[in-house]
Picture 1 (spheres, rainbow, N blue to C red):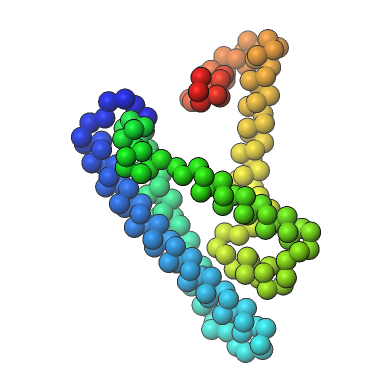
Picture 2: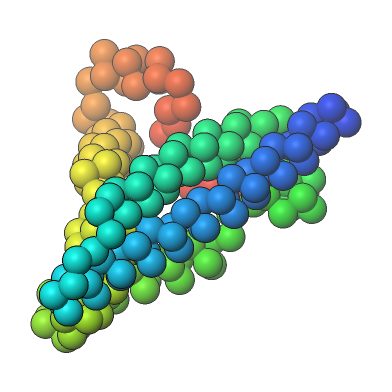
Length: 186
């Protein structure tokens, strides 16, 4: 984010925020529809009735498409937000809600722990598995990000210790966005 924003930058961010909100609403609706389709399919299977052919698949395709649109809108908003000040971003309500994100992450972790401990009923397991994007463990992308973060931390520690080779220092400093200090307050 930068200090001096132009009126055009702010107008663009406002428009992108509106587009993101619309995409988020559509994604939530598609998620609800997918959840409902999966629950209906599960209920039909449990009761021995025939389920509606292709209902879950169609709902999954709709959710996948909504997710692509949302991701694009969210990325466009994030890119545009870098052109306005932090204060303006806060006023527009586009800074991430870290408390809500942490609460969601904690809930997911608790449910995974309860599952691993065998504390969830079959119905609770089925309900969670009906949630779009639900995984019982971290996604491969998350695992890769964590591995990359550990590697970067090791490089920073080696740099701080003075044990990082000069050629590695030069290569890392040539990377866009690389910093030796990851403390945001620094």
